[in-house]
Length: 203
Image 1 (cartoon, one colour):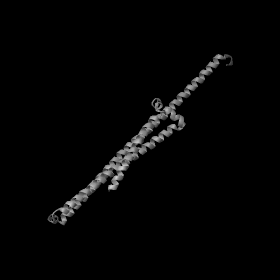
Image 2 (tube, rainbow, N blue to C red):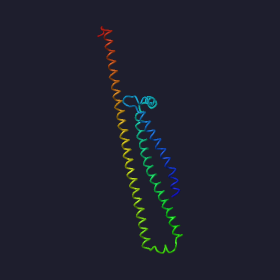
Image 3 (cartoon, rainbow, N blue to C red):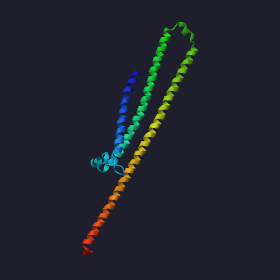
Image 4 (cartoon, rainbow, N blue to C red):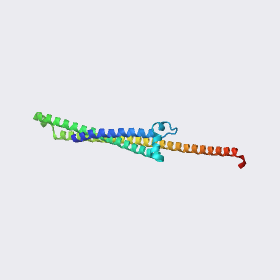
């Protein structure tokens, strides 16, 4: 059990590091995605991303955001389980130490004290201890389930926000394309009118 506690002490900081890096990457990817007014995205390098990735830049950022959200969810759930395992391991180690101390005290106690304990009292004590351990384990399991549900809800919220952001980017791109098309048509009509004015004989 002591070895397990040592392994958990190594794994927990690693998972925290992964979670922190994932959170930073999520923030960066969301900031790089071009918003409707193109102000914040341009500031954080949306134009450069479009030049490097081309027309697929939006899809790449959407997929990256989804994957990073999943990694964040998994790391959070893993971290919750590891902390619960660590607490359980510490409780068991503490219980073992207490048991050893009680055994040492009973070994050094007077023989008359051991003779006063009947078999029925010892059985009741053991049953009570088992009941307490089962209740503690059940409580830990319920806490893990509740925390897992909260983490799943948070991950679902993040994914929904990512989808809404992706939809906004798509609408902005479509609006920009329509505006450019209308501008080209207006310029074309202006050029035709100018040509008709300059060469009226060709009408």
